[in-house]
Length: 361
Figure (spheres, rainbow, N blue to C red):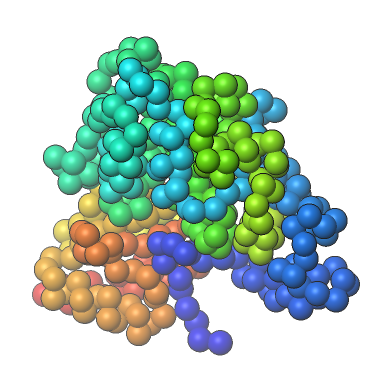
């Protein structure tokens, strides 16, 4: 096979061991003679996969007993709507912290259902940093929403200290399972799986049980969190193959050493690429402020558009995939999610250094 380094922002790289395991079991799952995709979601074999995936996620993230783990569909985009549908009430205001395009989209969707306020926004600085929070009273907002990692701009909350609200909600689609997080600080966490957890198709929701008491009644059943809690995420046919692959990814993460080892590796990987940027004497410029840099999405530009195109062209020829920045801001982006191996980041660093030697005249 051709040597390829996959830095796609999502759907993203999956662990090679996981893909091999899935290939081995694809036609015949556990000597049943059929694929896991062909098993009934009400049957014994899939039920075991479903529960194992939940339990592994609880173990790896140290999720307390007062939380439910849900496997839903529709990606983070459906959660943008489900959250206000379930939790916005007349006469109350919800607060959104804007740190990039995805938090903007979450606010725009919530605005259709009630009174929404952006507590603070980093848009004026082109979302190059996580903005300082103004002081606010918890009583001001029925819930507060943030996006923990911003894939397009390459920024990330280094810490959640100082954000105090009894019902804090976080979109962690692009950094869940990449580092230790204080689960008990949040009322609800959601994450599309296609960056760190598995393939596209399943969305993980970590839901504090008492949050159900806040939920509105009279919603369509499929859009009510209570429905999915009562039915253990089996109200309708779940994305069984995506959940099966998620289970394999979680097994891989556990065997690797769990969250502590993943965080250590992610710091090491990101550091390699940031050092190539910082030591380039301006040949490469990082988009994110240093205190807001993401471990997951390293964003940078070169001196001009022509040089950027040449960089991306030569990189692709060398087997580096997915390095083009998001269409909304351009430049370059290396997404170093959990499954991206250290060797890929070492190879990218070396390529960046060699490209500078050739073109920095």
